[in-house]
Amino acid sequence: MLSKRVIPCLDVHNGRTVKGINFVDLIDAGDPVEQARLYNDLGADEICFLDISATNEGRKTLFNIVSKVAESCFIPLTVGGGIKENPDINNLLKSGADKVSINSAAVFRPNLIKEASDSFGCQCIVLAIDAYKDYNNFKSGYNVSTHGGKKKTDIDALEWAIQGEKYGAGEILLTSMNADGTKLGYDIELTCKISSEVSIPVIASGGAGKPMDMVNVLKKGKASAVLAASIFHFGVYSIENVKKEMLKYNIPVRETW
Amino acid sequence: MFILIIDYGSGNIKSVYNSVKKTLKNFQKSFELKVSRDISDINKADKIILPGVGSFDQCMNRIRKINDLVETLKYQVITKKKHFLGICVGMQILADYGYENQKTKGLSWINGDVKPLKNSTHNSKDLKIPHMGWNNLIIYKYNYLLDDITQNDQFYFVHSFFFDIKHNKNIICNTKHGINIPAIVNQDNIFGFQFHPEKSGRSGLKILYNWLKLS
Image (cartoon, rainbow over all chains, first blue to last red):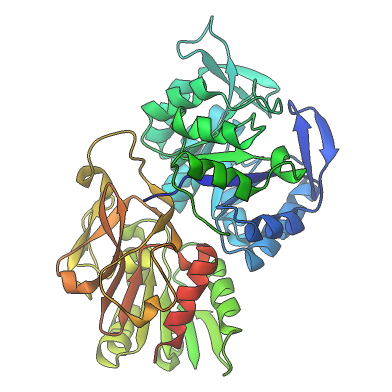
């Protein structure tokens, strides 16, 4: 039976891992290569790097990080942040990434998903959606934001997810911008709405504060995977804590202890 | 012992290389490991790995474009019985035909066709396609490859098409995602993994070790 995945996410800024509260305050949280190795040993099912460097220098650092991690971690690596065109994707895949996540650039040019999926296969194209609650103006109750949450668009999050699947995305990384950094739990309503309407897997992101939050979004939100950053980085809970809680609720996990 | 990973321009060869290199450290004897598409290397190799990411038709087209590759592989693997391992699409192209994007002729080393999971599974959005993530093996037949591997070991799968094997004797393990999906296939010296051993953590390295040990 297919296990539900637990994915630690490393937000990388100029070669260091950071985690912002509501995407604003950046707190230094360590060396991404060391952290990735540690998470690999501790039973992560996949590791996600989000590059939030705005500079080309930061970008080059990321290639080195990915390539170092790929030498010693034999689990899937997803890399996102600042991807605009096929050559970006090619470079990341060559440096050792297995999947790339595309966010803002796909909103501006949805065909990018199609181009990427045609060239590299849908299995490595993750559509990242940053969703904001807006019950008044959007049918699904959520709209799409870009640029790490700084800019709002007039696109309905659910419609965008359905469209993304049609364009050839192999997976959706769904972040609730309202829940992100709050540690109050994932947005179950958002996750369930989107997961129920697409056939591709949905990774829930934003808001994890305790293992039970993961259980809830996997059960009620119908997510295929959960992504979290700060609760793992600061050692509040381990991946094993989360997986053991999942097991208690009969959620299939990959046991690594 | 010379191990060759065939580079025909498909997918993440580097992680296959890294994982085999790491596994080889567990052996006493020395190995040569190389990534290449040269016919002379295929002729020299003792064991051949064919990785594959992307679509069936793309992979087959790329392989056919390389002069003499199909004929050389066939001679070395079918006639000379060299150990061969196909990974993911590298396993799927062992089939007679693939139906990804368009009907494409495969290598026909193991009988069966590669079909979409979508039409074969019930049409529910609860069963996600691609079949992406960690799944266990349902072991049918014992094989040396499964030394130290149990039903608790999980392997990383990511695919939307599956190898609909014609003869059950070619199936060593299945995995389940809605339907039974052949996970390890075999015909004499030819093995194929639907999952990615290079991305399957310790379990993946164990199975690679077992394959490298085969003589």
